[in-house]
Length: 350
Image 1: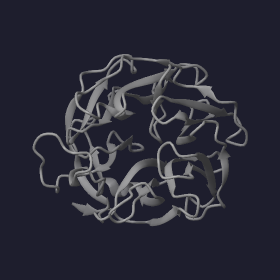
Image 2 (image 1 turned 45 degrees about the vertical axis):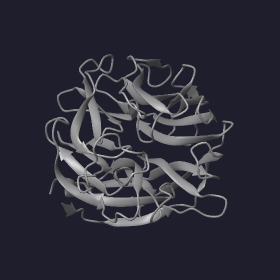
Image 3 (image 1 turned 90 degrees about the vertical axis):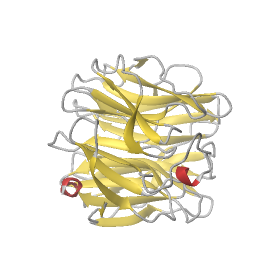
Image 4 (image 1 turned 30 degrees about the vertical axis):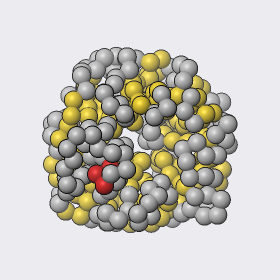
């Protein structure tokens, strides 16, 4: 496996006093060529700690950034978190995020829209209008060829956060939302969690899930997300950890970032949550030329297995790919500093 060519990398949002966790962010290109980055800034180490969303701007492709500033105040009893940006075909911007009111019973996704390239934003609009705990990972909003906006989500049930996966959609550029399909599930403690969706070259939608089955599972839709095939294991051996995927610009190929555990000793039977197999390392990129059916060109993005890497975002800007993700401390914890890596997009297929 090759190490990916590095163009630039830095801990872009390091932790500090009263701020032990920064991550789950996203980056979007603005009309003037600058970049807007936003991320979840926590005042505690847990998913339900108090937190806000902060932002920075870059005018040189991501090499230097303005000072951090508050972007979205905390509207929840716990926090706001998990940033997604989407440039709509209309030219407007969508900003998606979670408002969490309870650590296990009350969480919902919202969107705000901007018609002036991020200078002002609308009031929050609920994107998951159902009761319960419904969340989404960062960097998850997409718009399909039909113009439909999709937000893949997970619904947590029970005290152990068993997850069901589904997709909410909007046919009016994010002004109103509905759940498109029944919830998908897998047996076991984790279920079908933290889904993402990408549109393939043939028009189908490929949805992936984190599981406790030592594999990433996936399914496919041919009707713009209204129905999905049965979840099935992919060839990607992975821990209980999220992945990110996107279509490479000007190509039919898909890019995925995930924690590749092929070098970890195999586990027979159920894998304990705290096992070596479930350590979120290394961070690896792979490419699919057949709409997610198989993967090749595996490359290390982060090869140091003493640290963990997760909750990635992928943004294409010019001829570069900008990645953000958590970097953990050696031996843990794994949700600490937010790292930025800028890689020539051509490197993924070399």
